[in-house]
Every structure is written in structure tokens, then in C-alpha cells.
Image (cartoon, rainbow, N blue to C red):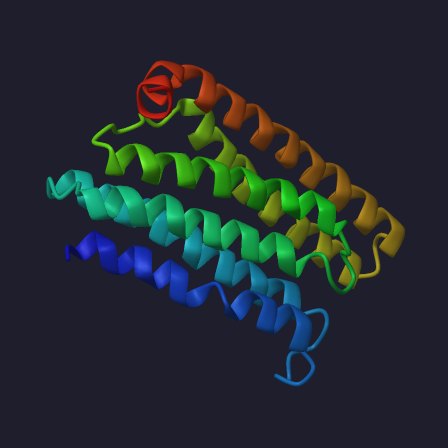
Length: 195
């Protein structure tokens, strides 16, 4: 266990508070206008811990196999929990869009695991990093839209429409990044799956 791993675990431990605050803010004594700011704080801590764990791992020359597995796993857990949360309440994005993210992560993670067990490491793709950054950006965008909505500056219809289009763009790019990943690693996948 390196120091960077603790920052990754911090992200995994903090993100469950996101749906708790969004769905139960009244029981927690948080007003509706303050709730989006608490959500922003949670997202900010998660994003900061993501930057810090990578920086520390490179700075201290502690890039490890465990870190290579934990970091993308923490990213996936964070983003999918946020998207799932936004299928409820004011935002109400369609659940089917969230299934796109889950399906993509399940397929790619399974292929990585199978290939690793057979001694073949699949290279990460730039499109995968862009996918993660885009999802984080969409999550922040929706929370900012919530801030505007709770201030009474836009209607709930606008909030839901903006959120839908933002998540749809992220879902489309997630599919693209999966295709890019599979195509770029096709030679290795053939070696593993084709006798």
C-alpha cells in the first residue's frame, strides 16, 4: 500500500455521501438551496483526490499494478453512482442511459481481467481518459444546473433537458471509447480468445 492508494480509497469512501445528500437532504437538515453546494463539495473532493493520487504516484515513483486497477475502478464507481443518483429526484435522467455506462465498464473490465489472467496487459487508450474527464465534467455541469434551478432561475423542464443532453453526450462517447479500446487492442484480444 502506497500513499497514493489511500487517496484512491478516500474517493471510494466519500462518494456514497453524494446520493445520501441528494436524496435525503431534508432529513440531514440541509436546505434545498444549500444541497447543490454540498454536492459540489463532494465532487470537488473526489476530483482532487483523483489528481493527487496520480501526482503522488508519479512524483514518488510509486506507480503500481494495484494502483492501475484501483484508480479506474474508483473513477467508474464515482461516476456511475452519481449518474444513478441523478435518475431520481429533480434531475430524473433516464435509467437506460446509465445502463450504457455500466455495460461499457463491465465489458472492458472483464476483458482486462481475462487478458491479465492470461498474461496479456491491454494498453489504456487516450479515449478512455477523455471518457472519464467528460463524465466528471457532466457531473459537475448537472450540479451547477441544480444550483441555478434551486435559485429559481430555470424551470425543472430546462434542468431535466440540459441534464439529459449532457448525459447522452457522455454515454455516446463512452460507447465510442469502448469501440476504440477494442479495436486498438484487437491483436491482443485475438491471441487470448482465438485458439
